[in-house]
Image 1 (tube, helix red, strand yellow):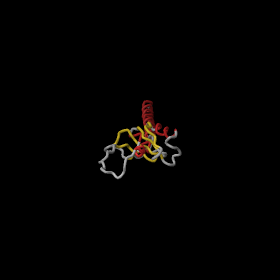
Image 2: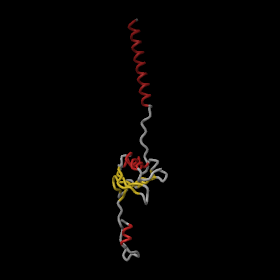
Image 3: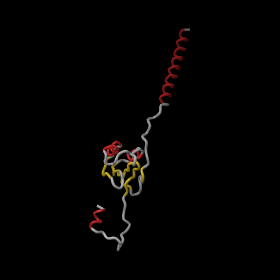
Length: 143
């Protein structure tokens, strides 16, 4: 009789232990995974003439800072990039060195208007007898 009780206790303990382990495993697997960082769209990403690792970043007009400000440079470095050149006239932004993943994460930042992968561009031809003249002062404009 005592052997029967001991056997029943062992079976009950095994069942309880298995049920507890299943409950713990079920609750652990139900935990949400860590959220992946937000990614935005990179314009001309992986285009035929794309320059690997080189991107043009334009800041939003409402970003609250200019490209020349320390906040702008720290924005680029926060995503792992480096500033190669700062633009202030034609646009408020940078030429940067980033990986593809860094560029996509930077593109999702609310202070960024756009991220575009640099591309090689080529002249398709020349114009003979152009109606404009290249003077010394004109050349100064394009340096």
